[in-house]
Length: 222
Image (cartoon, rainbow, N blue to C red):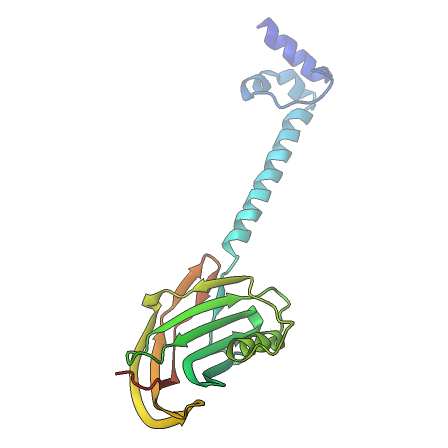
């Protein structure tokens, strides 16, 4: 009882260690004298700080919830499609690139010309903010030629597309065509494929789509 009266008296005078502090609720409630004199700096100070902390936490939580992932849609109007199926020495595996300038990304697919099932693999390449559509075009060109452009940005991140997300739907023989320095006969096919909606990471998604490519099957493949 003596201790509690002493604490109440010191609170009223503002003499507890020369500063305002946050006391346990049982002690604060006992200091009726301090409350009646309007000296509530310690109590009010704690309330203000706690409220500010609560608002800060709420704001951070809201920001995390509203941070929408990047969705890659290769059918958007600004997407540049580039298909390549031959080199200087003849027809090759078919490569298909979708450049998405707005998200600084490229969706790259590869179709084998050594298998009549036309297996497909793919990757998503992400580039640094500020990478232009021209930069992306140069990078694609270097993947399908003799790397003519020396100053080309490299991906900051590359993610493999899961095999279950890629499917060759059908293929149709078109014609035979000679090519390469040996003037060999290749069989030309149109290959239809589908890519499922894929979650690549917590902040990156790929929308589902369908498309078709031309594949020149190597001589001798049965």
